[in-house]
Image (cartoon, rainbow, N blue to C red; front, side):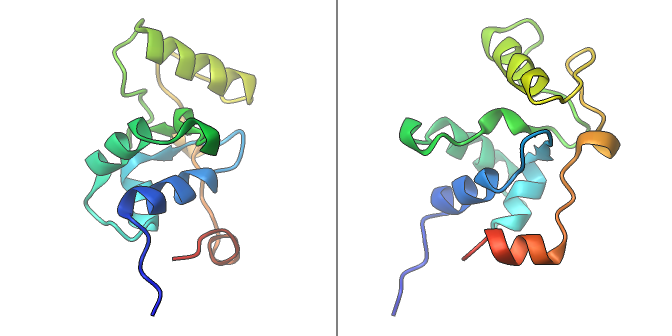
Length: 115
């Protein structure tokens, strides 16, 4: 019998599925990883992601589109820069979720997520 992947691994795989030019919320990632209500765990897991996985942590924001890091901080600026490089518009540390929020369809989820 196969063992279930560690919750952090499920989170990393889910974040890896977010396409370039889009963002997802911490809660959305938790839900898609089969961890409903564990948005804070997503933030912690991203901090533990191995560098060699190249998890695009910067594509994950608060549900209202705000960058979670304090405005002007090193990480907020890095996140903003990486999003801008992918064509995501960031105004006053906020992304318009209706424009740049990832809305995967069922086929995309079935192809990309395997838990």
